[in-house]
Length: 291
Ligand code: ADP
Ligand code: MG
Image 1 (cartoon, rainbow, N blue to C red):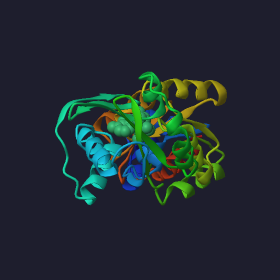
Image 2 (image 1 turned 180 degrees about the vertical axis):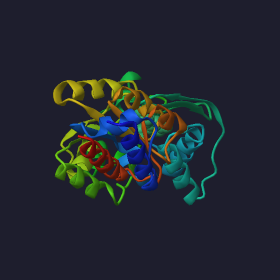
Image 3 (image 1 turned 45 degrees about the vertical axis):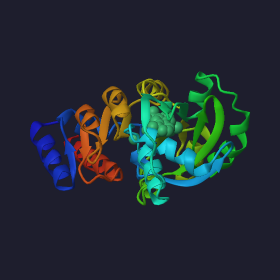
Image 4 (image 1 turned 30 degrees about the vertical axis):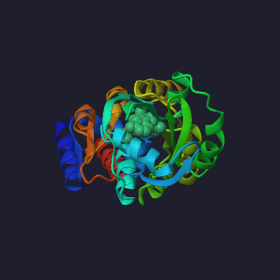
């Protein structure tokens, strides 16, 4: 590849809203066999909403108020959804005496003298909670592609909150366009297997990895590299940074976190993950003209 043609390709991509931060990435993208996407905030809007509140034990509004109070200390998009739901009900939030995030699991808090756990099944298992009472609402929600948020108070299952994060309107056609170009599409998510699979099925994704801990995304990239060859990873979050760095081409959503953008080789300026197709086309055209 000549420096001039790389410059022309990079300039053309920039006009189309795709920032190639290194000339290497423009060359590497045309050769990828698999494009792996983060789910939350990348294929989905990342602006989840509370859709269901299922009480197992206690008063619904009181429980929701406690959870919202604890979530006020969290940065997770799920936390914002729960806060908005409490606000919509006009609930007054109690005082939180302790709160700490458990990465990939949820959070632990102390609210009005009660120990409260908020998060996924992994959190409940880790904290040795008897989870039988959670099973039925959990599988109901997951089957609909919703994320169940489990709540235990003083070690007892108390509440299940259903969260829905709509897929972006462009996601399905992006995956179709990649398939038409002979690319395999994977999705990697920290979400529950059932919820992730429901969304993957809906979008026509070839390969799903769910319940991935923040540290695990980079490992999945190397497993995909071993099985299929060159891999691009598309993501937006802090927890996507290691995967973006270890992929052959890391692609960040321009509206994503600074950490993700810094770890990436390519930035999709408009905030639409569908622009990865534009990036691929410019890369292929540039390299075809060179050969
Ligand atoms: P993702 O970005 O895919 O949600 P994370 O590693 O941030 O991945 O979180 C993994 C899972 O942990 C979430 O899907 C959710 O089930 C749970 N979780 C994390 N943080 C919170 C929180 N603040 N409140 C409730 N659940 C949480
Ligand atoms: Mg994300």
